[in-house]
Image (tube, rainbow, N blue to C red; front, side):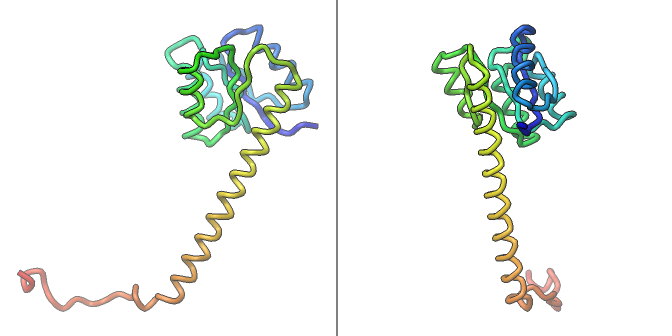
Amino acid sequence: MAEGKILIVEDEHIVAMGIKRMLKSLGYTLAGVASSGEDAIRKAEITFPDLVLMDIMLKGDMNGIEAAKEIKERLDVPVVYLTACSESKIVERAWKTGPLGYIVKPFDEKDLQKSIDVALCRHRMEKNELEKSSDKAEKGFEKCGKSSRKLFEPVECTESLQDLN
């Protein structure tokens, strides 16, 4: 059984329902379906998905690239873009947000599963690496703290600011 709670962000209802069926068939848990960038951010904050499948072109004031950037910054949730868009400027803007995948529509269930699995695995690995480096840094600070405690002992100042002028 596949692991992962996934939020679908797609403004075309029929496409969203098709993706939803694929995800259920593959064994993923559905965190929800959003049809706008603002709705995607709101649902991500409520459901804490493991991954967001994000369409780039959305109806409303916020496109998928802007929504993906917000979700990633606020919640550190990985994003895989789903789009029919292949315009180089838009693709370049999308890549700048650091997605963990980019699937061009139309796609099949196998393509979707591979992209999701790679994205979830890569995100887990990145998190583990970050935790390991954080642990090493903490241990380094602890060593420094033990060997240099005398440097940080309080010092009583006998001079006043007026004496220094």
